[in-house]
Image (tube, rainbow, N blue to C red; front, side):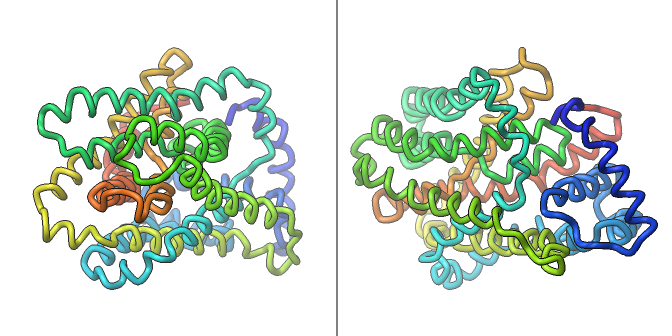
Length: 380
């Protein structure tokens, strides 16, 4: 978000802050929720995770908007869902039929958390938005397809992993990517516009390119794949945008953001657990394949980030890092749900591992981010 877009609202935010210090707390208007969450995230940038000062500031200021357990333990709870699904495969198997429902729920909650007011401003720059979408949804998977099918397969890379890498590159960026971008000080509004646009285009781009690049390895027609993806994404967007129009009573609105944050962690945890269905059995049956899948799955995220960032390095450091973030963090779960029963289980296992990497990578990158902050690096 640019300084110009924030400046017109500074007096309003300052006035609201002065009012809350002199009077009793009142329910935040729905349109002001994002600004209050943004203030709290600014505190997250200032203090180290777990800092007592951060906890005190959070409870004193906007405690009702972001529960401390979400802020402190949310990432670990989601990773715990991955571990639970792998260690107790019966739980993952029981949740697997609800995978499409959980995907719809995560889309709805992500849309409820998003600030969409500045999206029209970015739509006035169609050239940039179109170029980014083309690179993420077309150029990126084509590049991965060439590297895997032409080069890596000849060096012994299993076909299921090669196909899975292509499908992962075809997936749209996570709708949670704008929140990650905001925490890192990147262009969160650009990330939001691209993530939403990519999801809306995904049923068409994935269906056309997947059947072209993978061919008979996918036992599903273009129309059926498009309808499955369209149903999941369409329901998520329809419910999410409808709920955004609902005016909540004051008592409910006061705690609405806290509820959404908590439900998001719960939905993502259940989603991570459900995706592990079949991974444990595959690890027992073919541990070599699973180890190779873990290696390739966790390398794919940073490699896609590097590819995305390098394509837009001339657009500025902040923009290039934002594009890199979008390129690496993909919503692969959509393809797991859409392709269940229509492709090799080994391919679905690899896709699950790729999605797990998106849950785990933020934890692995935290020490790096702390080091970057300690040397005074600024992405602005």
